[in-house]
Length: 393
Image (cartoon, rainbow, N blue to C red; front, side, top):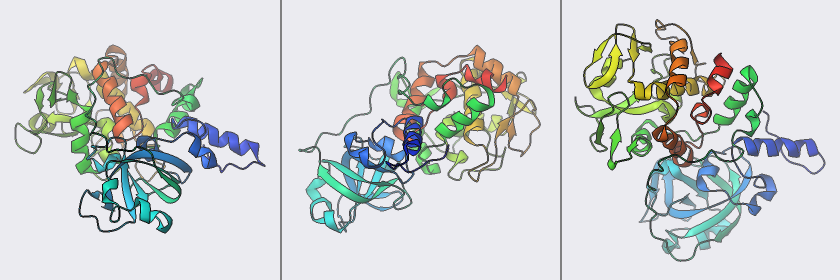
């Protein structure tokens, strides 16, 4: 889908802009000059970094000075502020860096106005990178939108059933099947905020939180509930498992597929090593510390409760990474001997697992958290598992 600028003399272009807004889940009326009518959240602004003009409302967290650095005291300049959807936000990946040009510095610069921190601000400008980070530049309007400093907002308690899919997020895919559906889904989910590999630690502590114990995460293959703080490289620590093994396409841990939280999960270090870069299939010997998992020389079988989760993560990666953005064209196949090729199997087994183990509350909640707080995109196969068969048969 080609993005086009809205002009009054070309109604077809207006339609194109509206379709784009619907595809990325942004309310109608927020593209171009009409953006002031319906302000975006910070999460929505981070998911729409394509140069459009929009109005964004958020809480002032501090002064950004680098891609992952935001000062919350000792401010050094009036040239930038970082906004977030929560006044107590600490993760820079969930902040929007707003350029403060000369016209606004006396009122909105933090060096001059340090008490601005924690207050709500509304800004209109171009949604484009600033400090190599999701941003808003060249503001045409800025105003206070909150009043007194609010109390930090705690992380919400996980919903037992997940949250409904946002209206219109999949509008571009409506009524499509097969290759047309695949193309539409790729266009929708490629609009995302990209995380660094270090930021993945914080993301997983949120997305994989144990519903029964918020101090813990649930490990993917072993199913064990383990302290969020016990992450690292020790034998009984948990680390970051690439469900689409990063050697299948040789994309490593660089920002992109190597840091996409939709396929990264917490796992015990030794169990992660047992899986290695093997393809997925049924059979083999039991895996120590991971009841219900099996492995042999060339494949790994996850426990029944997450077989569908694994399948849907693999299918997401195939749709998200189609080879057009500098990364390999990832695709599942029916082999378990894929080596370093950008392929991963066994597809027939993955499709069966998707049918066998439908999305549960934990998986739905995880998908929603990634959308709301981290990447701004969704795994379509969690929302619509039936689309797997529509695309791959």
